[in-house]
Length: 266
Image (cartoon, rainbow, N blue to C red; front, side, top):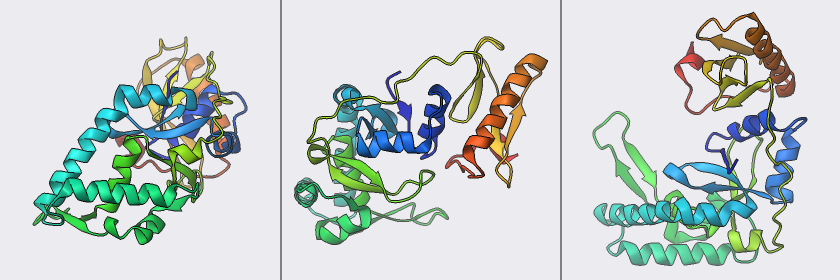
């Protein structure tokens, strides 16, 4: 296993729990923010993933560099087209260097703190003019996205609970000054149990690894199964047992997906 999906904040926790016996939220947070053996990084399809530290150079070369180049060119084009900056490339270079200078001493900053400290990040661009969903999008977060994809900054500690995404930003160089490369949450095979990924249930052995349904939570936090076909009594017992264990593990916390599936909405 190379990485786990991490754009939806809770997905990486649920995916890791499905593969590591006895894993707790604090175990994963320790690996991300204390041991720093895992890292959140923008890669394929401009999507956030969690990689082992040792795999980060491979992800950077294999996917992230292309994402960074695409984001950079798009941002330059957009700020010039909007009349926000005549020379978009010069503006982006200046803003990027100011952000890196701010983060160079090893401190972490929230997005709002970075914006307050770097005036070059001010400004917004209109999108969808005349459309009901139109509005204005600030350029500051897009600069951070470009720097993140380029591997120059990263999402450090989270300024919120594990079900939310409120990252503090740090310089990649300062975050890994100690060179830690240990992986405390090494994936392991899961036999005879439900493997959850993107909130879909897959059963090893009993239904041939097919996706046979999904799950959601009730208002009080219980995991509710949503099977799409008859999978037999034995497989259903396995899934129901895993649903009960997941309900207990969540302890009443409701995890709300950013992009709920049709099953989740029913």
